[in-house]
Image (cartoon, rainbow, N blue to C red; front, side, top):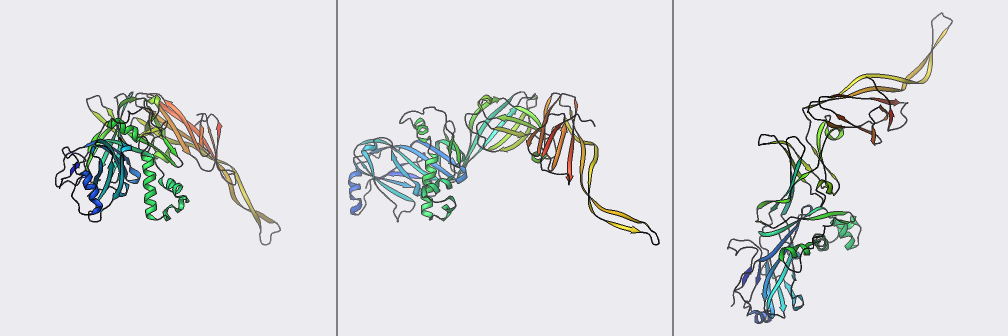
Length: 496
């Protein structure tokens, strides 16, 4: 009996290892079904334990799916060569495992795939070979338990004139398998699997949940693999050095129906053992242009003036080559004493190319913000007549008529002073945005604009040590006087 050799997923396995293994075996097996395989594989060279030539992980967090592609160099002999694939103690989906020949494909053929009932968590391929020699094979499958999370580091100089930005990705492996020297690809954005399953199954999207489980799983695997395989062959060629080199073309943002996603490739390779996390750099530190703006938006930030750092994911900002994954941004400032001052930590959502990154640093203690109301008045009062009552004194001759009335409408006039005092030592840009429900007239010389039909915004630059009084009048039509639900802008000089 000839002993098998192992093509391992890393170094030679110990007895305690639960790693997935691939065997090329020549074994003495009783029964006519296996007799041809035994005769043909008896001369397999068992002198070398081949390792993975390349490994690629494409991770899609939203569905807990990772598409694994690995290549190995295997020596085949003419005849039938049995291969064994095992996934014991891992989260590999056995129904997704596929074998492909990257070299000499016209000389090789998979005769059958068998799942032996007496050996669970294994499958066998019988490969017919017309050649003696080395062949590069590719094995693909889905696994679960591998996740990623992006994070970013922003570092401003002490005068906040320059901002450095670095990106990182932390990959956590709880799949049951060790992955050595793996190229990592991240699905950034959304793949609408339900929409694509409905298209392939030719059913409405709301009927997808009624499909038989086996049908659903099969179509789901096909849809996910097609989406997650985009760009994989050229990337694998660059890693493995086969079939040509990566062409270096700009990556494509894929938009298909309700799906919009991007496959982001982390430079280099990393080893990620089972049960471990590995933090990798997604892009090098760059000095990026940015803007600091002070904002008052009560509906977004509460009743306070907050300081914002604004970046744009575009080429002018030395970014914009790809969308940015959602993740956590941490912002620090050089304190000028060989140390850093922590400013904020904030989670950002997926940032398409051209979109802004807005980081809220909170209130600035050196900028005082007050909303004063120096004047209020009410006019244009209307009453509703509800008939009248007559009164006459006993013994008197004259009657007094008194109308029954109730106030039906009026106008409220409020003058506000948005006072800002700047003690920061440098000019600041301030944006005020507030929503006013009802029938409103907004009067001011601040050159306001409408953000929407009920929301007014205006901007002002406040010099160092300046006290700025931003005056405006609100006229709110109440009751009978209210004819519409929007804000009308009027240019007027307002005095307190």
